[in-house]
Image (tube, rainbow, N blue to C red; front, top):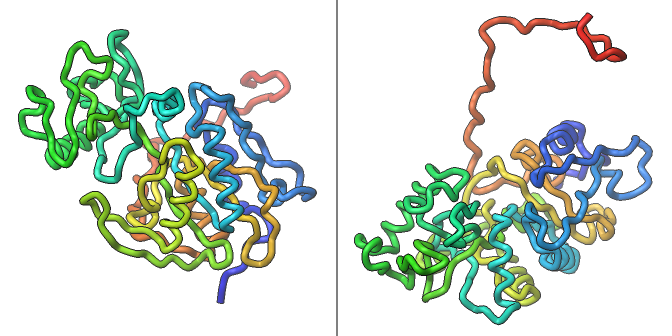
Length: 330
């Protein structure tokens, strides 16, 4: 029997969702009082404030957010989308300026996009780049090097640093005069981040998750049956085809990452979600609780690995009594 949606936003979800640090450096809004007068209050959350176009921390273009929101309602699905590198969005906008030299990451490219520009000669942030030449431009250079090693082994010549050559259409710009020095290219175009789907969930039967296994661009590609239709509609309405492959939930497990959540029009028991603004899950615990309590125990492709143990202190904590009127130790 299909699990019923909880009547209110689950208490065990409220804390991690509301209290986690806001990913864009702004404070999270707290829930209203228990009186329920709107769908958003029923969930025990507030929608995040919209970000101005070009905001330093924006992880999705405003117009693309509207596309996801409208398609989720029209197709009556939950659309879950991982936050992307905000520095990539300016390169996605280049097509609007008549510059067709930038493309979203295809599924065969697992190398990471850079996070910062630290050299005035080059524009690297937001593009797939060689972390061995741009180590200081990545927040996590060790991880970037790991994925670059896999990418270069699969798609680049052993002497790419001297020749720039690769396979499967991939190459590297090795010209010191280029503003994108040692950035990866495909068919001569530079590569920026795409929008990674986490999942597409049928609102009428959220617990069901059929996985179709296939190959795309030489890589394993798992997706659910509604993906081709929804991908086509999303990319048609965006000026750049930012959705390149199926949902992560059909490949792997839930991980510690912020996720955009776009609501369907109607829930499995006739709930009206049509006025619900998108929200953001801030951590894995929130995602796990939603999958269990809102999505009927829906399972992803793989079980999440155990979280690392929390720090245990050798000595008991010191209790300090505080006068909250004076904010001083007594």
